[in-house]
Image (cartoon, rainbow, N blue to C red):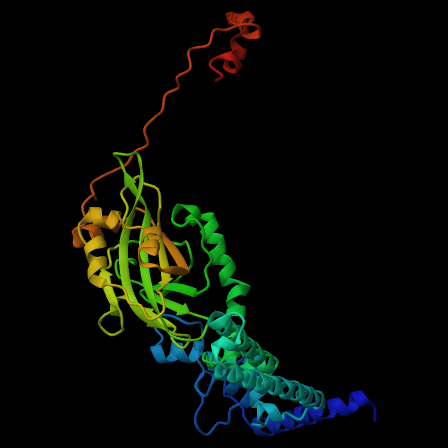
Length: 452
């Protein structure tokens, strides 16, 4: 028997067993119909006495959901349809035909040999982790005077060793198929470095590039900040609808505060500040634009295990302090689109912001909101911008009603572009034009009359 036959024999045996069991249970079933049965027909209703194909049960569930998701579906049906725990349809079919064998015990020789190699590599990484932890304990036990650089060098050395331990932990489990399966199913433990690494890698694959593109496309740098590099995954949703970065939203949709999905990739808890700013408020007096603060909340505790936060719950159901309540985004008729930027700023370790001072600075009249700026907030309180997302708003059919409900003035203002007349003097005809001003050349006047 060749090597290929030895490897393929367990697969062939499993396929034969599955096909035999399926044919034995379904050969006696006949559905009553007046038309010939098609290959792709599936009964819409099944009684408890009728056996079901295990592959169909794995793909569609015990009670299949037909059609595509719609508003008529219940939340339980939608959650069952979109649950990441079920994985792909191919995987659910494979699970149904594997005889409930644990994933790590699948009878494939190549797979088991690969697992042995991964186990040996993981043992080497664990040995290195143990040796590095011993170095850390030895460095912590030594006095700072024994180091040439003193306490500063000692802390720097400890930080480097701890970083190396985290790297070894990632390398020890990065190739484990069980770890990858848990991450794909949304069951990853974000307290472990390997899952944080996989999440950050997935974010950098596409979402980070889109955010960087929006920052340069809409001139967030340098209009709001001189330079900025996002390090936190931040997504927005209004009224349970996800929002693409830079999308133009209806005023009725943005009347309520959004919910954010924020994922940090480094360990530990920290305090965050969330700010929403409109950087395109027209100023007719100066013939330019100003900023306006639409929301500001501080002292929000966050760690890698947290992901979702509704801004309207801050200070009520969620921890944090609201300094400036939500002001619905709005614009006047004739003004260009407004860029609404959502910034997440990380506070200094173990340092809370004075909410009373923030309210005094920015939660007053309309002029105090216009005095707000991300750069000024960063410099005044020592914050570090780490996350960003944005959306846009324009005048639409619901803007006037939203402004009236919230007492926002300016709905009757319309901006029009001032017509700029040319300052050039009328040019006298000369040369070719002067020679052809007679009625004889009337057909050519359209090429010579006021070209400029």
